[in-house]
Image 1: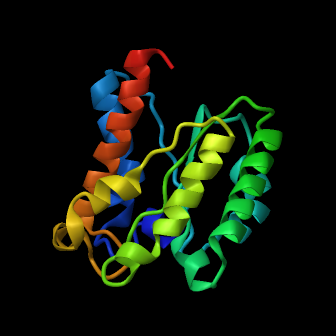
Image 2: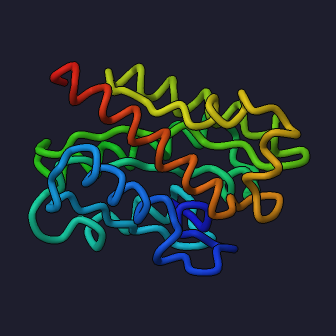
Length: 188
């Protein structure tokens, strides 16, 4: 992901970003202390960057699961939703190739921001969902979960117009954990 995933605006991003909180949450829910969640997020990153970083990010054994959350910077770069979807498909193809298909992939729908980005990111969230559907992948609808809160309900979860605060990262981690635990209980 980008700066949203990296935890920009958090006082202690290494302890408060959703990847770290998700790891603790999954360990607690699964009763298994070996669950490891690693963030490869880079502030300012776009999917075009992520595509070129696949070899760097996937050195060593293939991970069991990869989630991806991009879009805010791609939108700022004026990429159309179609171009964004094409970049996501290329990224997914590269991840599949380098992991030899051993890694489950679950895209996360691009989240809204505060202000005009509350609706401006909708086409990207839909693009992620459409790509996931075409690849027959589950998609974590984090965008929908945040939008359900409405504009006013989203603001207490935001540190600024783009970046979630600690409470926002906690909400994101719990939403992702709920999604994953549902699949564990369903045996997927």
